[in-house]
Amino acid sequence: MTPPASAPLAGRRIRAAVIGTGAIARGSHLPALDRLAAEGETEVVAAVDIDGAAVEAFCAEGGIPHAYTDLERMLAEQRPDLVTICTPPTLHREQSVAALRAGAWVWCEKPPVPTLADYDAVQAEEGADGGPYASIVFQHRFGSGAEHVRRLLAEQAMGRPLVAHCQTTWYRDTAYYAVPWRGRWRTEGGGPAMGHGIHQMDLLLELLGPWSEVRAMAGRLVHDVETEDVSTALVRFENGAMATIVNSVLSPDEVSRIRIDCERATVELTHLYGHSNDNWRITPAPDVPGDRAAAWQDFGPDVPSSHLAQLRALVASMRAGERPRSSGADGRTSLELVTALYKSAFTDATVERGEIGTGDPFYTALHGGAPGWAPAAVPLGTEEVPA
Image 1: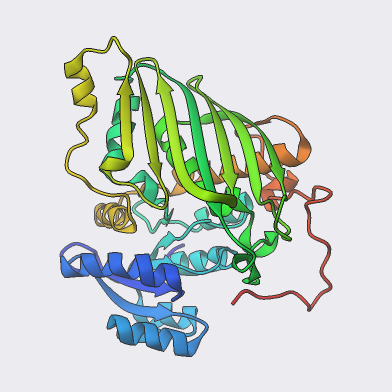
Image 2 (image 1 turned 90 degrees about the horizontal axis):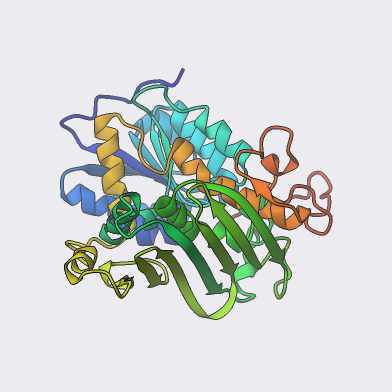
């Protein structure tokens, strides 16, 4: 049984620890934690990294009192309420499980874990009622623009959603893939569908609801990697809407885009790594009354999508003892779509939601052992460990 947190959360700051001290920790997690610390919500009590010099520097710069190179020791000595995981994907399962078993809630960077099997193993360690829970960093769901459009679509204010397009077309050069753990199934889990496009796909699912089937293609057109560097997919949703998805790291003109055509209006989001109200556009059909169209355009006060916006919601869930968004089944749905995309691409077949489970080769590896995609066997003792 998971032990309880060190003390009730009511009336005190949430004790947080950062695991991994690289760019995402410095640029997104720590600033969000510090902002909530200034508001009396959190305090960062420790950081962990296998590089002793790096974690000492991180703590010195951030005013963090305790630096560790051993996760288990930190969990035992500091008893954090919340652990934020900013390490390569291959480490996420082990670190999430360790934190949950120590009674800490988990906020883990995407990709959540390399496989559905890993995700289910993490979820099995969660508390039964009231936490601790493990949630995934899907910050694009949060912010005023996403919340406003999600509400309009849920109410069908603009009519039924019919046609959608989801685009993550970015550019990554050979230097990007020189990092040893990138572009490999075992350490990164997948290519741009998993590591880049998952954010826009997660937002698409947040807006349109459950998907029902997917048909996909994937290619390795430029980079000398194990995974794909481009993929396309056709997705049907339970509500009848049909969508196209493109994920690429071959696109010099970089953009992230979602477009949804409803019966009475088109909604479009165009940005790159984050969005505010100005990045959304709603174009009403010609016969829509002006007052109704004006109401659709009222996004309210601008709250940009960000780690901070999601962390606020997570902290509120922790204090309420409630499962946060992007955890459990809600967090799993995007990873399941990504997994189905790979299965469809590598088997040349339509994949239905719910069909990938124990015994399916894609449940334990996104390449599914497919010829031409599965990595060559590595002799024991020669595997590379990500830095």
